[in-house]
Length: 474
Image (cartoon, rainbow, N blue to C red; front, side, top):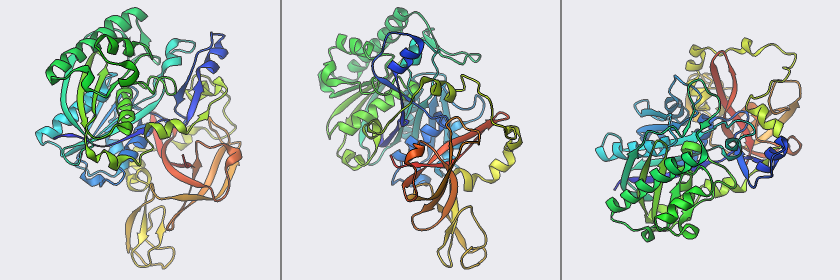
């Protein structure tokens, strides 16, 4: 039976306390904290981080599709799924699709992947969902929204959770939206949004799905929902007869926030981390309708216990302070640029980016087949034995690494000074120079272990320039 073969998640390391936001605006103190994507992260980089965790031990060439869901993709007109597939090293014939414009984009993508696998169109599909949504400063959405990503590998063999049934309803309602002219998410009146929108639609869809699945609320050990706040999902679940204390998966709001199109799938990942063989999970995603899935955990779930997942990412965090830093990271305040040549002089060209796909996007170097020396960037002539054109491509992105040397530059332009420039040595050979991110400058030292992460370098001339950075091991 078709289902989920593997899963992964990503939560940024930075957390912004809601009390910090409230204090900045003179508002009553609010509990909890929200996950904040760093200045060099977006929905693309977070989706790649979740996907890399999801496909550990999987041959990328065997994955036949990538479906990316987000209401905040980096481009309005340019496919993100194709970029994800290239970074991960998938076959050129893998089918790539973007799902955008809906908070249930994540479950839309899951339903589409399930249908593709069942029809035989694709043997396996990687579903990624990620969002970095902006609420108006001093508003409730700013407090509620958090950043995060999830990834699921859907297929019909060695599944860790069988998808036994799916059901969907659509609904036209102007409850939460963002037009092509808006920077911030807009919302209707609270009671209308929560009762006529989320509450009525999710309850109707879950009630109908349970009848179609021939299941009762007590048959499920966990219910996973995307949620606009911590309370409303519980009210809906309680009206349907679920035990909200035992069955409702609600680990995200207090410490992460509402992660948009990724939230339902992140809740599912949190449930899969805990459940054992035979457990049944009910999943629902809301946004102009509702998608519902019934899943049953298989014995293969024990093979996926080596993930960071939701629990690991929740344990690994760094408090972001002051609030002004968050505004700076989101480009909501202007600061004086450094006295350096403008970024326009570093305008990347589409042709140059295309030529460097192999080395830059995949972080592939070469390894000499004559003497075995790895090197980056890719070289035709071995720097060790000087043999020419005797090499094979060599992937550095997942290899353990350590800091050989570093320097802190307080003059270079950055939204998180200083720029920490590092020389990184890889286990087994190979060395590159790159920036370090997600670090405390006081804790950086020679010899510290680091891992590679795909990040945004800068935006200029309408083009986002991405490459790899190192970060301290999480």
